[in-house]
Length: 252
Image 1: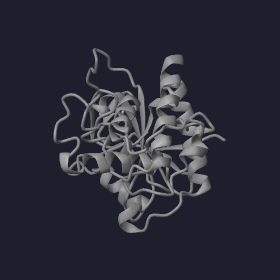
Image 2: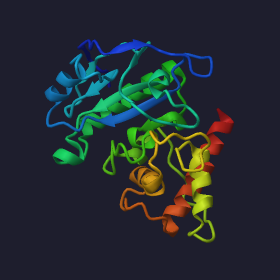
Image 3: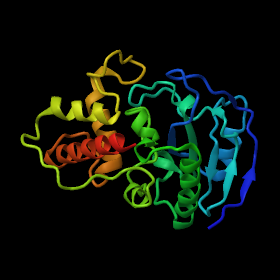
Image 4: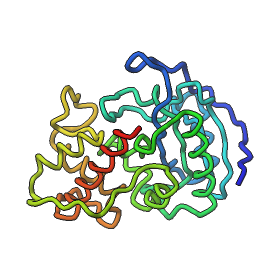
């Protein structure tokens, strides 16, 4: 499948900033647009007053629009955190996937759209040597503040294509009420959690931090139950994901 990418330049971008003394792209961040139509999303992402953008937009029919050149810093991630990195905009390429989102009638992502995403994501990952464990959802980097791409997004199917990771279902942990252990594992994966050193209140609000980060995890890895409750299955999945991420990073 070849993509015919349509050029629609947005004025909302800037130069990438050095993170850890590097300006290389290392993350791919997936969003949903959360607007009522593709055109409304494109208009907003190209509006200089909005001060937001993304590198690509994928419509529900699989049409792909390029708004910002990959070498530039698009403004899609906002305030976020992942595995020690705060300026995710400078380290990532952002793809907005057209979907009304939770506010306007969240629905499943069409096959044509996901097929186009698969082609585009694999190409980006290959060209920038982005590892599978560095393919993220907006909610991964901003728990509580963002919920996209949400519990209907086909993470498991994409992971089977090497786009993101999916855990083995073989890790069992005793004592599922061990919140400290679960938070430690989530921190090892990359999530912002209350115990992460130097976390500012702009990342997670203390009163809801635990619930928010568990909801973010569930929205990706336990999509049938997104309630922020650390039950036995959520705890086991957190452990499995931690093992999968550790193995992936070690082999990178």
